[in-house]
Each structure stands twice: as structure tokens, then as C-alpha cells.
Length: 293
Image (cartoon, rainbow, N blue to C red):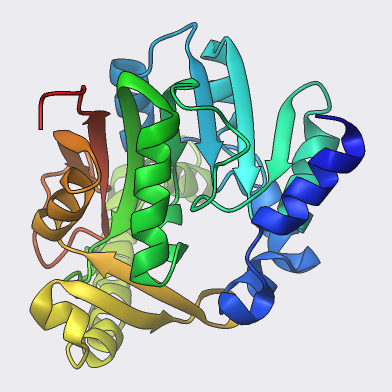
């Protein structure tokens, strides 16, 4: 495919702003810069990528954003392709990683790729929840199944619509370092650590309490909370139409598109997952080989 044909394919395969309420947000320069500045893997991603992605396979990185997952995935892949429907995101990725392959495109239309091209597909940062509405997400899952090799792996994460409680959290090592700066090497380090820890625990509890109350008011009155599958308005980046589903619903939907569930892990790993606490889940699926359905 020559450059002009490739550019035309990108335009044709990309949803129009009117068709997707979130595209204008993700395609803005400010939001693209935000994602371009992220350069880490979550604990879940580190564990699942290491366990289920085979070095030397072809990997399709869907919803690549600003390239947060690119260094790791491209480092183990024989062929790496980053895809995003926001042209601004892809422009940034091409600037950051000029030697790698990126394309503007919709996960629901992977016609640029032949069937059985990839050994694995990854859609991190809950990207699947923004392939909306439902029929477009189902097309995306079927398209991903098509471009994967037999028994190819799909890893993605998705919001938990029943997450209404926020766990208090704080950095104990940071508290310790602050105490040492205040008390120096004197015998007062231990009392200062105790006092600062107490203050930090109380502050974290207050933040978690108010955050939980706000989330309860937003989600408790949505159909998504009660049915376990639906939409709500996320205030991130000025407002995003967001889909989420409980694990049973995600597994049911993905299995109907040609996959079998391999593993589910809460984003709060290594802490245990809790139905009303875990913000989102990471899923590992494998493509069902022909004849196994």
C-alpha cells in the first residue's frame, strides 16, 4: 500500500466526530500531550504481559494513545503496530518512536490487516470502554478475533461500574523521608514518623470518604451499577461517555465474539479485588480455535 492509499485508508476507517462523542476530546492537543507524558506500566500490566505475551510474536497495540505501552510491547515483538482513532495521538507516537509502525484507525475496522496477522492484541487503559456504542464494541471484538492467529491472546482492561468505594492510600516511605528531613538524625525521628503517619492516615481517610460519597452519588443512580453493564459520564478531560461492565458480563460478551477467558485480575493487584472497590479489571482471553466453539 503506497502512502496516499494508506492515508486514505486511515481517513475512511476512522469514525467521524459526530459518530463518537469522545473523539474530539481524545483528538485534542492538550489531552494527547497528557497521554504522551505517561511512561509506566501498571503492576497488573507488568504481570500479565510477562505471563501471556510471547516474545517474538506480532503485537497489535490498540488505543495506543501517547505510546505508554509502546516501549515494552515493541521491545518483545517481532512486529509491533500501534493503532488509535485519534490522529493527534498517532502524530505524537510517530514523533516519539519514528522507527515503529503506527496508524490512525478504528478498532471496529481492522480491514487493513489480513486474518491471522497477530499473535497478540492489547488494549490498555480501559480503551475498550470507549469503543461505543455496544454494536461497535462487538464489531471490534470480532475484528480482533479475525486478525489474531489461532489461540492468539487478547489483553484489555475495563471499568467496574460497581466500584463506589475508594481505598485510603498513602506512601509510607515518603512519610518516613519527610520525618527524617524534619528531625534529622536525632532521637525524635520515631515520634515524628508516628505523628506524620497518623496525620497522613487521617487525611487519606478523609479524601477516600469524600471521594466515595461523590462516586456513590454519581453511580448508584445509573443503570450500569444495578445491571452490571452500561454507561455513565466520566468527568475526566471535561467529560467522557464511558462504558463499563462487571466481569461476568465482559466474559459473556467476549466469549460470544470468539474468545475464551483465561484470567481476570483487579487493577488493585497485589491487593485482593473487591466488588465495590476495584476500579477496573484486566482480562486475558485467547482466541477459540476453529471447531472448539
